[in-house]
Length: 478
Image 1 (cartoon, rainbow, N blue to C red):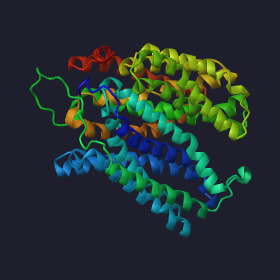
Image 2: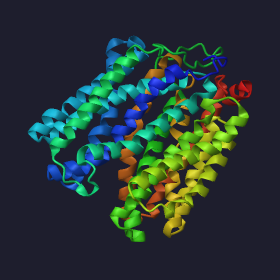
Image 3: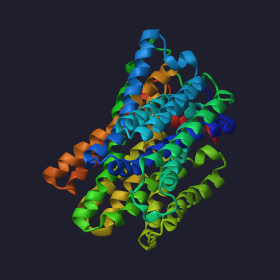
Image 4: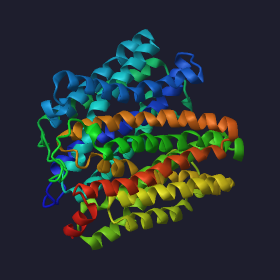
C-alpha cells in the first residue's frame, strides 16, 4: 500500500465499524442467554456452556468451509466475490441464524437455539475474515493497526452495552427478575438483531467500501519464486500461533478470575461481576488509547487525546456500573494503573511490533504480580491484563498479514480460525489449577505472553528482510 495514502477514509471506515459493534454485542449477550437457557431447559452448568461452544466453534468451522470452497473454486473466495460482497453475505448468514430463534422458542428446543447461534457465528467468521484486513487497508499502513484498534474499541462498546440491552429486553426493568424469564422472551430481541444485520448488510452493499482494497505486498525483487499459499509466509504461520495464545490468555485470565476471587479472597459470586466488567472495560480503555493515531497526525493533539481517551473509556465503565447500582469506591484507584498503559502506548510510537513487545512484557509482569501478591492488589494485577491485551489483536493481525498481497484474505481466514484458542487455553488453565492451585495456574498466561514477546522480536526481522519497515513508514508520515 502506498504510504502517501495517509488519511483514514472515515466515510468507508464508519459503516465497516458497525460490523465490529455487532460481534461484541452478540458475544457478550451470550453471557445473558446462558443462565436463561440453563433455567428454562433445566441444564447442568456444563450443558449451559454449550452456548459459548456453539458460538466460538463456528469461527473455526466457518474458516474451514471458506478454505474448502476456495480450494474447490481454485481461487480465493473473497478475491472472487469481493470484500464488500463478502461482508454483506456474512451479515445475511448471521441474519438467517437469528430467524431460528423463533421456531426454537415456540417449540422449546435448546438444539435449535444452539443451531441459530452457530449460524450467527458462521456469518461472523466470514465477516471477520473480510473486515479485519479491510480496516487495515482504509488509509495508511502506518495507522493500519491503530484503525484495527479503534474498530476493537467499538467492538468493546458492543460488549459493554449488549448485555444491558438484551437483559432489559428479556427481563424488563425489574433487575430482581434474575433468570425467571420464559424462553419466549428471547425471540423478539434476536429477531430485531437479525433485522439490523439485514439492514446493515444492504447498506454495506451500496456503500463506498472498496471491493478489492490495496494490500501490502512484499518487496521481493530478489526472490523470484511465486508463493502459492498464505502458509508459505512465516509471519503468518507464527502469527496464527500468536493469535491462538493471545485469545487464550485474554479469555482464560477473565474466566478463571471468579474462581480465584471466591476461593482465595472470599468474595461472594454476586460481588464479582463489577471486577469481571472492569477486566473487559480495560480492553476498551486500551483500545481507545491505541486508536488515537488513526484520528489525527497532529502530534500535539495526539498527546492530549492519549490522556483523554483512556479516562473517557474508564468513565463509560464507571457510568455503566453506577447505573447497575454497584459501589464505585474500590475502582477509583485503578485510574493510576491506566497511567502505565498510557506510558507504554507512548513508548511504542505506533509501531505494531514494538507495541506487541512492550504490552506482552507488561502482561507477564501483571500476571507475575497477581501470582505473588494477595488481596485487592492481586485482583487489580490480574484485571490490568485486560489493558495489556487490548492492542495485541490488531498488532498481531497487522504483522501477520503484512506482505501477503493477494493471499491476504486467505491468511486472514487462517487467523480467524485460531480464535478457538480462547476455549482451549481456558480449559488448559482450569486443568492446571486443579493440580497446582488457581493462583499459580496463571503461569499458563505468562507462557502465552512469552511466545508473543518472541513473535514481536522475530517478525520485525522477517518483515524488514522483505522491505516492510513500520518505523520508516512512521518516520515518513510526520
